[in-house]
Amino acid sequence: MEWRIIINMYAKINYSPYYYLNSRHLNLLDFGLELNGKKQEEKLFKIGQNQNMLLDFVELTFNYVKWIFPKYSCDYSNHIYNQPQLFTILAMKTYLKTTYREIIEILEASDKITKFLKLTKLPHYTTIQKFFVRMSDTKLKDLNKLILFMHLIDCELAAMDGTGHTSDYADHYYAKIRGKCRKSYIKNHIAIDVDTRMILNYAANRGPKYDTQFAIASIRQLKSYAPHYILADRAYDTEPIRKCINEEVGAFDQIPLKKNAKTGHYRLNSATIFWHDVYARRMNVESVISVIKRRFNGGNYSRSTSLQNKETKLKDVLYNIYRAIQVF
Picture 1 (cartoon, rainbow, N blue to C red):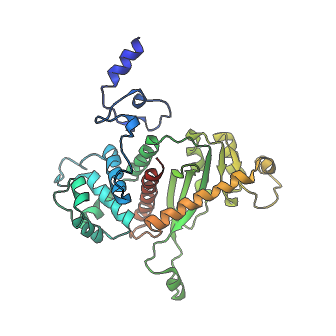
Picture 2 (picture 1 turned 120 degrees about the vertical axis):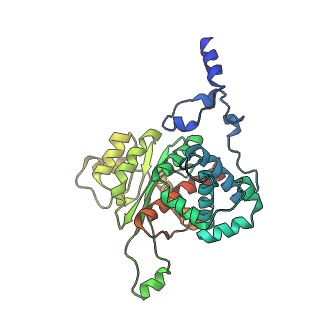
Picture 3 (picture 1 turned 60 degrees about the vertical axis):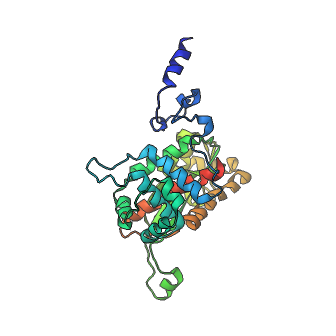
């Protein structure tokens, strides 16, 4: 049995699942590979044992980022704090909706978290701020891929929608009556797996922007999940979007018509494949948007547009960690 000998040989090697992020096939984890003494059936990162949502969130976040971020940003850094520690503190700040100063004050009163993170000394709040500025969007995307990889998703229904994240500190009504209401915001577009409500892909850019400007790229990223149906509201009712869903992804579109269709092959045939019971589950994507805004804040308070985009993407990724604790 040569294949058994080969499997046993590889089972002794500690591979990171990061190398398999784009694969939907079985990997060495499925054949008894151990990682730090734990097998896949132990779920690697045990969730829900703290009886405290914040502690679970901190523990899972810290364990994930250790696979994505190198320990130190460069060989010449002072090596007092490592990148997984700094990212986890940043995640805590976002989760608790605090300022950079406040999260350090909270850590001063939390021996359990500082002990888990192995912090012998607390960083200055500007250290967290600078880490966020230099953190790349690519690392966030890799982190999201790892989260989805560790929780294999059988996507039958996918849903898309977009929302806006304001950058105004003042109350919207107060700003409106004072005539200083900001017209620009960050447009956050997400696609989710309806059953688990996990975010499969995301995009953020300065608004106002139409959802259709994000749609084609988002739909193409769903191809690897092979969904049966892709759900979206009537704002996505265009022939190119329906064509992309049907021809490139091989799924059925569930998009209501804006008005009676007069042109377009897929628009003309949409009434024959539209199922109201299936479309009703599109509300799950609006529920996810609501949770992101309530749990992680609907406002972005970074000064530049690029940092506000990154702040929005960070919330999408942290939502997936938060949701993984609840679902898996």
